[in-house]
Image (cartoon, rainbow, N blue to C red):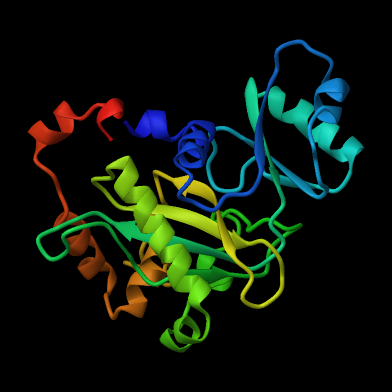
Amino acid sequence: MVELHDDKHYVNDMLRKSGQFTLPRGWLLEDDGQDLDARLNSLDLHFPTVGKPVRGRGSHGVKVCHDFDELRAHVQALWKESPAIILEDYLAGEEATVTVMPPSDEHATHWALPIVTRFNHANGVAPYNGIVAVTANSRAVTPEEYAADPTYSAIAKECEGVAKMMGLTAIMRIDVRRFTEQPGSKFALFDVNMKPNMTGPGRPGREDQASLTAIAAAQLGWDYPRLLKEMLSGAQPLRRLREMRPENV
């Protein structure tokens, strides 16, 4: 199930077909031997455009391309490691991430932890946490900010809806970004992350190694052990997991 939903195009296509979620425009581009320039010219591209692999880790392979030549070169580079890539409209506004917890005895359905906002991007993309610790460029959105800007609550509800539609039985994280830099601009979903980084500060020298999910949990007053216990509270019987099929979620 994770392997299937780790394909970003599969998930994006499913979300678009549902008509329930806000996403940027996007296209799948496969290396099928056809003329690349003709393929790109056939798309209604608006620059900047983001090119990224259909499967990826962190920000690997994600690049904001500002013109046709830069996009062509990036597509050719991506095709060397993946026969299919995704092109998307660049979302210019605030980036944030939403961790969604599975149902448990305490929660009847999927529910979102406090949103974490991100800043100090490198060339329009949040750097990989192995290079820059997320604690250096991310913080939880405060209750006062939630109250002042209803778009935070709106996108959290959308992320909960994604998890529910996919039948998620474990923690997940969805990256979102505003369409523009204007305050209050609407958020769109741009990356459904089935395998979020779950690092936490636990020994000397790693005090700054909280994951984005751990930052969100801390806003609720949870330390890292409490977060792990909350994750375990949503564990499902092995029999149910074995019986799950993609067509049933």
